[in-house]
Length: 464
RNA sequence: UCCUCGAUAGCUCAAUGGUAGAGCACCCGGCUGUUAACCGGGUGGUUGCUGGUUCGAGUCCAGCUCGAGGAGCCA
Image (cartoon, rainbow, N blue to C red; front, side):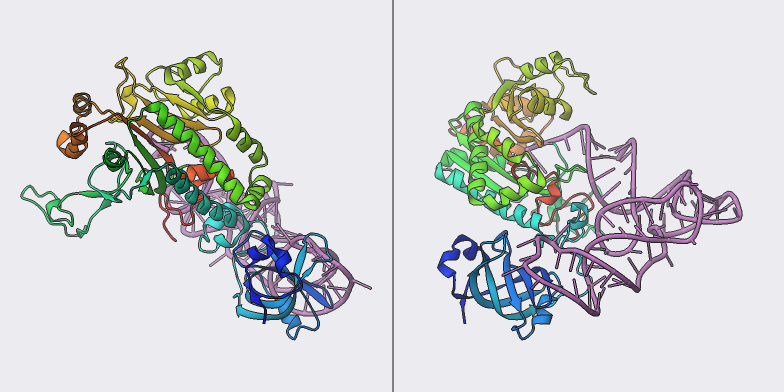
């Protein structure tokens, strides 16, 4: 009876197990056989590579073992030996192959390349494929990296609410949360649905951002961050949008826009470095099969200083570029996707912070600049993915904030506690939101957000 | 939501308006260490749905459903 080991343990330290009996349990990835011997490749989910098991006629169930269909769950015992064949340094000489779980006919995954579109239709099975192994393992590490980065810098992790009564930015469709029976709702005297009778006594929604709560907490802990699920009910049908996604939102007191950009740049670089060190095999896989210039792009990112330009400069650069854009570039209008891509992919060829957008195209809480026309906002644009981060210095001056709410027709009663933060020891503060999935896409080269979320929620799609 | 493209075997794809095919998977057989093994044979189809044009529709037309890409919204 050999020691129970994982495939990862074998690959990371084969020497300690060589010429010893071990037991491995996992799933058959492929099996091939010849007349008197055969090979079974087993993976147990702990490592990217498969363990090659060699069996020959001395195995009691030889014929059965070498004919096992892909996906069969097995437990294998045998001696770990140096492999005479090319392609692997060691292999397991199988002395016992026990079948733990059989595979029914019609198993949707085969040992060949499937399209991502097809794999989305079998989301419960696709984590077993090479690409999704790599993606989801990397996603796990990236999440860990987020926490390491902030914890190392003394940021406090705040669990902001998922159910909220405030529509954070006054824009964007929300998912309503209610226990009212839609077929027979309670009604008030005017005949409208009476949300006073709803669970929370008012209308509530799934959060679109934890920012407002993070702002409250940064006035207590100085530096905080949130990292959790976020929901948008937008009818967006693109490879970059999901109805449910994760967002990272740091918020710093006694800080301005420059500090927010410094933090964002450090965070992105830390993330890339961390996962590259922790998951070299996975990164190698992405480089080989997903995006062939991935390493060049990421090396560039690690060594480049992110460009920083103002919106006004960006408009000028684009107008002088001599390119016929589908939409004209004009000061006061938001930059179109084609403009953002041109800036980051053609002009700078690296990540670019664009700051100082016109106040009319940005959210109410962003701090007004001295020119009275622009706000201390910043977007981080990266090649391939587009907008990766959006942030700003927040308006800490109460009269200006109240004026802005009034201009936008937003009731200040709805934001009473947010406004009070400015009355009780309010300080300059700044923060940003990082789309976690977009970061994972950027690091892996994956082109569709549906393929970096295990069970993605998008318009008309919540099967799994 | 708008624009464009697509839907044929379990998967990936072929098929001038004229008998629906290949590779892989699966089943059977062969094979002296294989690497998505290889070689030979076999099974497998209401061509997304509904209707129309035609002697005849996978192919042409209309509507619908689903998917993908682009745009908008954004992270």
